[in-house]
Length: 274
Ligand code: PEP
Ligand code: MN
Image (cartoon, rainbow, N blue to C red; front, side, top):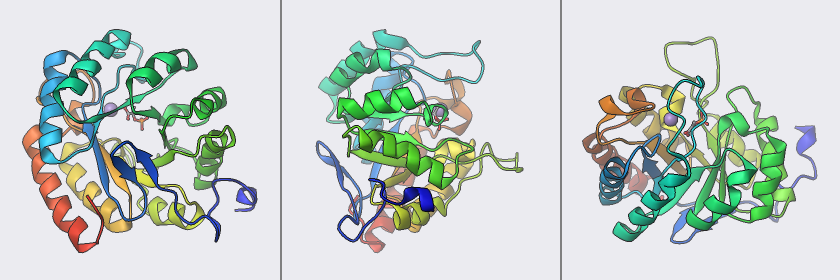
């Protein structure tokens, strides 16, 4: 990968592993940190029920999207800025850190003030203006791989963040488009060891969007941990059948608790702190 030569994302002898600290949550070598919550924050009752349950099950970070990039403009686009009040209440009621997707640089000030970890979604992986602005903000950020990006393109997108001075970047494999249509995407599990070979940045896996089916989320999650991933971002909803987005791939609260118990066993064997 010639274009990675002399980049900041590239792994070197002097820089083998970056640990990204988001308050008490650590992403990187030796740790396995789980982010969980609904695809979208819908209302206080839904978000609070999800938050309390994922905290009890052992997640450290709450997935709390207010702005949703949806394929169809006629589907739920997210609760928007009014969701900030819900995030504040979740912070009061739990010890969870808050993670959310940023769609536009115009939301940066508002989100940076109220959340601990930003996410740049797959559709915006090569929105270079957004990458630069988030890079300047100096907040920890998750960068999701575009569904048709090569690993080199993915790492070069992360380079935009690092170049602006943001070293607290976490990569996320979320499945790629292949000829297979049974699953929503194809989880590129080897992206995990490949990224670890090429870059010092931590990499987590999204077992929800990569499979598109809740029945496969546990398998994808365990495979990710076994492959060396530094964590997961999982969609969890108190009532998946009523979810306004991605209910079909969301775990219910009980399923999430069961999965976390299994992951803890596996993490112990693999000597990863969870
Ligand atoms: C998401 O995580 O909410 C999401 C929309 O996923 P992706 O950007 O990977 O499609
Ligand atoms: Mn989703």
